[in-house]
Length: 278
Image 1 (cartoon, rainbow, N blue to C red):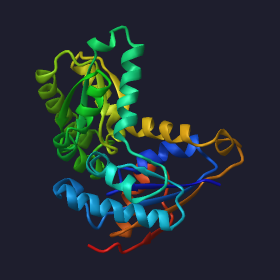
Image 2: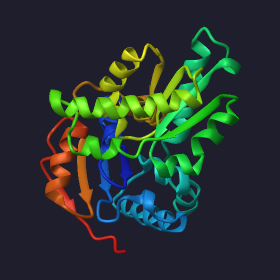
Image 3: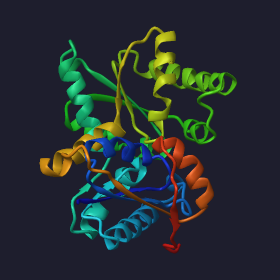
């Protein structure tokens, strides 16, 4: 049984775990949400690297044989530091999302050179320029749009009821209109935050109302596929296999269980509180 560690500063990485479970059903999963030290986006690069390395080492100490950095901020600012600190395979979320955008561009009618990727992400991720650099290396034009209100809207659960969803739709419409002013020719939309898969239905609705069709790339799903590609086929087979999931959080167990259940689409029955220091 392969032991795979999944790390995020909070809850968003559970969307990656949600995609991983059906792809590698026989694995043992260790998930850590560093909720005591979030948000990472307001911290310096040095502090983010220190937090991320300590979290990664914790999962390795618990037996993780492979690590998924299911956090865009940590991937953008500290992936190289984490790889230097640990001797196990490590996958971030930026490269798989960019590769999926390249595949979408290749499969579309437009030539790669004519494709323009719009990346929706947090302010910290956009400021890092990680997606622009990675997409640029793949010869894809990119525009990154910071959407700071989307994460709190998702965590407040303003997705389902008509009244709350209407507010989220308004916010999405404003962000997308601003983005289209910068990149009117954008034809691929990359969700550069692991919270955003929960917004995908509302994003599709907004794009339809704006008469701006785009192919949507879910970086959480792309990351899960990249991880599955590294696991031997024998590890992924077996309909009777049931994944074992162990959850850790550094603060607020009750909140982690409540919000995490929405991200993972199943109840989080037990979460262990751990102290990783400051």
